[in-house]
Image 1 (tube, helix red, strand yellow):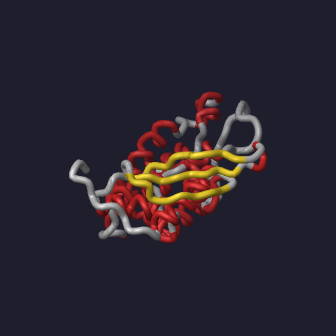
Image 2 (image 1 turned 90 degrees about the vertical axis):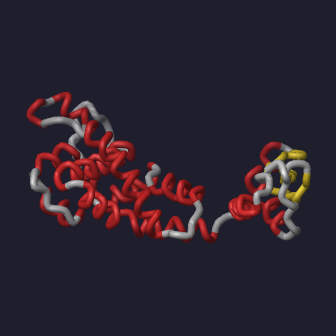
Image 3 (image 1 turned 180 degrees about the vertical axis):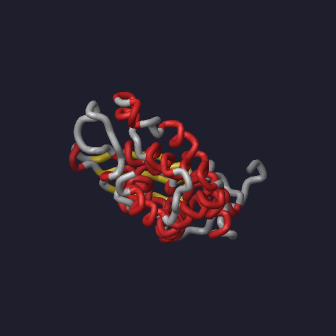
Amino acid sequence: MAGGTDLEARLGVRFADPHLLESALTHPSLANESKAAGPGNQRLEFLGDSVLALSVSDHLYRLFPDVTEGRLSSLRAKTVSGPTLMSVAAELGLETRVRVGRGHMGPVTPRVLEDALEAIVGAVYLDQGFEAAHGLVGRLFTPVIEALAREERAGSAKSALQESHLKRGIALPEYRVDAVEGPGHKSVFRVSVWAGETRLGDGRGSSKKAAEEEAAKNALLTPPPAPSDNQ
């Protein structure tokens, strides 16, 4: 397969069955146009999606032994999200590797690259088993996971407030828009944040999100309410 050796070097995997890698890089549009192209990558993508999710979960569990289930779920969702897959696929140069049919007009789309990356994970799993696929995911995604974890640690006030309430068994923060002032293009949102019937803080901002963030920052400056017996 043309270019296969170079891509295998980037992946750190030498396929026993190179046709699996070829199939992972074959978009259904080409498979539908030509039987000679071999099968498309839809089935491999289906398999790779599950292998990737399990592998990422395992890496997260081992990398962050003290992190809560909620944060692990959040990190996993971000790691296997479309933008992250697209970024990893681009680093591998998959936009020049994926084979598409004549009916696929225009440039290779992000979704095509995401599917190809997941199909590659599925192909490695079939070719060499879970350990090899798990190793591939670790090489490709550990830098991404660590960067996402740093972002979450830096995190938003809203995330910090929610985490604080979860640890203390307090009702989760609820944000309410109290008013929207000014014309549409210069609106100022006034937002309050509550835990049950307790008002925790207030915020103002040019968007609802910004006002909520300020309200959360103010709430973090005040003593938290006592846990409710009903929580």
